[in-house]
Image 1 (spheres, helix red, strand yellow):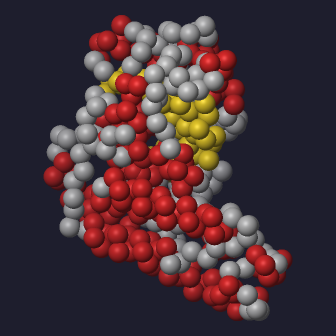
Image 2: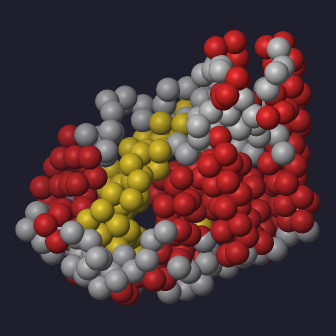
Length: 372
C-alpha cells in the first residue's frame, strides 16, 4: 500500500479539535459521521490500498475537528473490499472487512490486513451490499457517506449502480466516487454519474503516487508523549490484555510506514474519537460504562487486585489527570505542527486524503457541520 493512503487515513483519525473542558476529550453527542469505505482490491490497486493505510490517521484527525450545533459528533468507519478473486464469487467478490466501528485500533488492524488479487469489480453490488448490511440509522443530523474507489467501469455486474443510488437516497446516504486514473476516463466509464445520482462528489486521483510526508520540528516530542500516553491505560476484563497488545501493534504499524504516520496516529489517540471503554478502565469509568463496585477481582489488573473501591477510584483518577495533561500537550504541539506543514506543503496534496476531506466538508455544510 502506498504512503499516500496511509496519510489519508491518518488524517481521518486526527480530525478532533481541542476540548474546552478539563480532560480535552469532550463527551460526544448522539450525532454520527458515518463513513463506509469501499476499496477495490484487485491486482491494479496496490497503490490505492497503500494510500489508504498511509493517510488513515490524518483523515481521522481532520474529522475530529468537526462540530454540529456546538457538539463533537461521533465517528464510525466501515470498510469493504471488492473485486478480489479470493473473495466469494456468489457474493459478487465482496467482503465486509469491518462493519461500522468506533474502535480505531480495530479499523487500523483490518485496513492493514488488506492485500490485492485479480478480480471482477461490481460497483453497484458493493454499494447495495453496504446499504443492506450496515446500520445507517434514521437520525437526520447524521452525516452518512459512502466512498467507493476503483478503476474499472462503474456499470459492471448484474446489479445496476442506478438502482443502488435510489436506495442510497432513501437512506439519506451520499455516494462519493473516486476514480483511480484519468479524470475524463472516469467520466466516460460512469464514475461521475454514480456520484451525481446521490449529489455526491466525483474525484479522480493518481493512486500510484506516493504519499508526501512533511517532517516537522514537533514530531519527536509528540512521539515521546505517545509513550507516556500508553502508560495511562489500565486494562480490565477479558479483552484487556489482547486489546492493549493490539494498541501497541497498531503503533508499530504506523511507525513502520513513516514517522509522520506514527505522529498522525498519536494525534488521533489524543482526540475524543479514540475510545477504549471496552478494555481500558479509565475510559470505561469516565464514560460511565463501568461501576467499580460491581467489578469482580478477576477483572482487575494485578496492580489493582486487593485494593478497595476507593483506592481503585483514586488510582484511576490519577491516570485520568495524567492522560488529560498529555492529550492537551499533544494537541498543542499538533497545532504548531499543522501550521508548519501548511506553510511547507503549499500546493502539495495527497490524493485520497484530499479528495475525501474535501467531499466530507462540502457535504457536511448541508447539515450545519462546521470545522474550526
